[in-house]
Length: 78
Picture 1 (cartoon, rainbow, N blue to C red):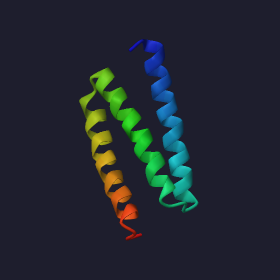
Picture 2 (cartoon, rainbow, N blue to C red; picture 1 turned 90 degrees about the horizontal axis):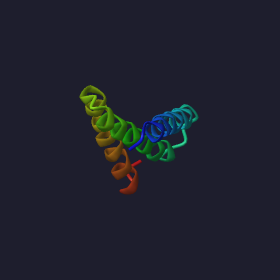
Picture 3 (spheres, helix red, strand yellow; picture 1 turned 180 degrees about the vertical axis):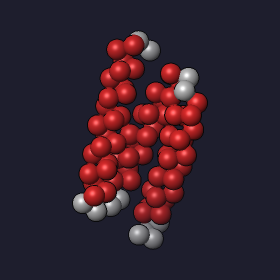
């Protein structure tokens, strides 16, 4: 992946995460979980491309937590 494409992924993932934070702040559930899952997955990919394992680990853990939220919401437990 080219440097330009990585930069686009980095910044689009950042914007998506900020939108997810806004949705959380105004309590729009479960959309906030889905949006943040997408943003964290983008940052996990950036972590892989940059070979920054600390970044990758935190994003993978965040994705797992958000997946629990998606399952929780899907099962109607929210």
